[in-house]
Amino acid sequence: MPELNWIPATDDETMTEYLEVAFGGDGNVYIRENINPETVVVTTETKWEAFCLGVKAGEFDHFVEGIDD
Image (cartoon, rainbow, N blue to C red; front, side):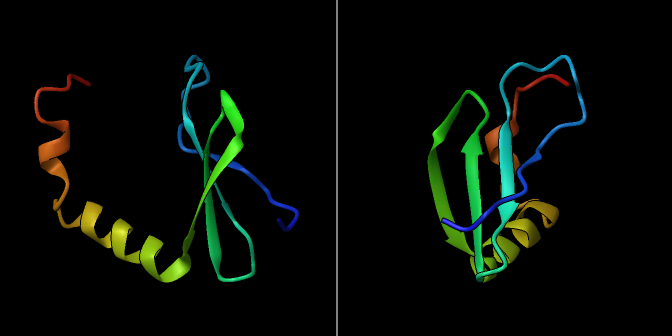
């Protein structure tokens, strides 16, 4: 695995569990949980971009129905 700069998927410093994302420069995107950093999911930048566009378009809103802010 390349040297990665992990970016927390939150700005809330009080959160104890969150996802981290890293862009490998090798065409892959790496995703892990901060509490389980040895387990890493790898996807392509193309699939990551499609996922992000889907989030922006509201395609996954049904997953957060009923969750309070």
